[in-house]
Image 1 (cartoon, helix red, strand yellow):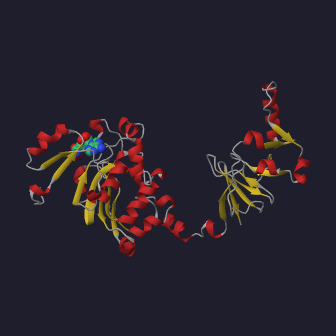
Image 2: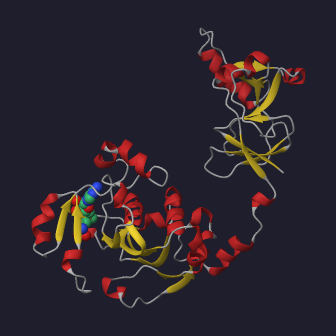
Image 3: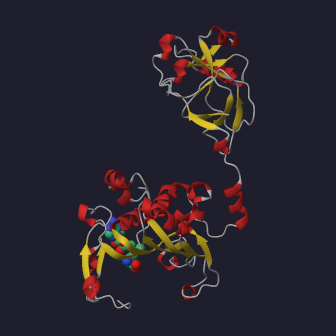
Length: 353
Ligand SMILES: C[S@@+](CC[C@H](N)C(=O)[O-])C[C@H]1O[C@@H](n2cnc3c(N)ncnc32)[C@H](O)[C@@H]1O
């Protein structure tokens, strides 16, 4: 209103109708609706400006749990965990091309890997005009502890605008101490939007040294040397995977078998020699933090009867020599993979040189 927009062009939306009286006193329109769920074909490309302080409700909240299926259907491909992320997507859809969005939200979407797709969505559809890290304690009197960021975006979508987006100069403002700093912040960085493609997961960095960015941009990429492939599923590892004698797993299986000595579902243990018959193949399943090398501990039943039950992805160069990386580990665990091996899709990724 202070910018001179005529009042009949402004509408405030909230799911909570108790705001109606207060809003109407401003002489602007109020509509009660669930912004996230009331998206219709004519909701797209509707607004010139969208301003908001969207709710921060995470996936454990009543709202997200109660509406999970509907939210997943609309936002699942980008992020259906936190409402503020869905509000960003929703509002970009609702903006006209060239329209502007200004939100104050949690700053977690800038860096968390769970918000990677949201960042990609923003990069593909918007010019990032400004990201300002607002004072940390801004909402602490309302018992909100997330640290806030203010983002200003202009909708500029489509492949045809890619060069414009890449060359867009963004104003990036590291955390300010108080709201008075918004107008003339002490530190403003101008960064070209294309730079947000350089760090892994498209992190929207604010305070990263130029040297670090350069390293990411100029270092050769692993993918120039290795190709990675997910593995296969047996659908019943207990039945088809055996421990090879005299390995760590052999000891584990023996202990387990003592505990379940009355059961007929014993853990299988095979002689190393059995690998030479072709009826068993070496198998790579887990690996935790074992680095660089570990003797193979597991074998997979390779009889025709067993193979029938497996899901084996096509075009994966099983049996080639390479490197195996454990998919379930708190730190990178890469080991030598000799020729002749198969690997499990849930637990490891095979890389061929
Ligand atoms: C952080 S408050 C901001 C309130 C006010 N706009 C402000 O800036 O002071 C978030 C607001 O979003 C509303 N809200 C929550 N979920 C909503 C939804 N799905 N659709 C529309 N509004 C919603 C809440 O009722 C609440 O008023």
